[in-house]
Image (cartoon, rainbow, N blue to C red; front, side, top):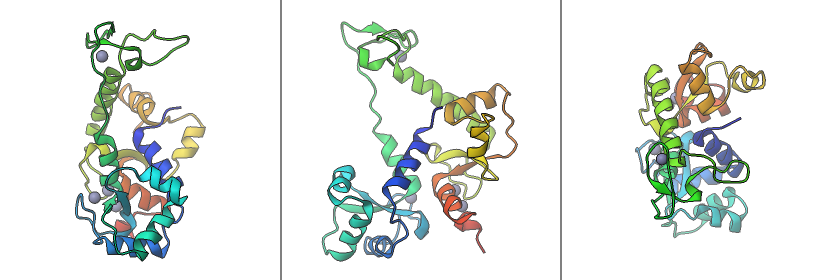
Amino acid sequence: MSTTPGQEYQRRWHESHPGYHNRHRITAVEKLGGRCVGCGGTESEFLSIDHILDDGHVQRRALKWTGSIYRNIANTVDSGAYQVLCLNCNIEKSLVCVRRHEAVVDGKACKSCDRLLGPSAYRKRGDGWTRTTCKDCESDLRRDVKVKVFTAFGNVCTCCSEPRLACLALDHVNGDGSQLRRDRVHLNGYNLYRRILNGSVLTVGLQLMCFNCNFSKHIGGVCVHRRP
Ligand SMILES: [Zn+2]
Ligand SMILES: [Zn+2]
Ligand SMILES: [Zn+2]
Ligand SMILES: [Zn+2]
């Protein structure tokens, strides 16, 4: 079963933010300006602290968990290494620097793009280098499939109209996604997208949602935008 980078990110995010709702996060976010430096959003539930130089994982290891980073920022004067990002802008940042493979003289030609590429550009299968389509072309293909499916769903978040592709994922309206996956009716990510395109999965009960709204719906039952 495959997961999209977005879902994987969300999972890791949940793991690394056990203290998300503690007061230190709110104090730290307020201290750093209280709004997302990417989109300007001020909805507290969406906001998290991002390490500007991207060595957040080193910090986290040193401080054990992100709650300590919040406390650190809340309690110290110098917080210049950090910025506030909402979940959408955070994931967009994390996906920007996906490196593409470079051609090498003694490489093997990709069936799809014709570039000569080394073993690391191909996905391993069995004892090695048998794939003939490079990882770059595979991810382009996955992206095309995703774009087609998202277009069918209107290309924006159902709740807040967020238009950035990297911030969107399909969401089960009734929150029954995990049950459906267990029943093998729906699969995650790419497999689900492909089956939607070939008509073997109905789109009833699915909607396009951004990570901000999705996270908020997950922790509060409905997104904060829809709460009374
Ligand atoms: Zn933002
Ligand atoms: Zn290729
Ligand atoms: Zn949204
Ligand atoms: Zn929303």
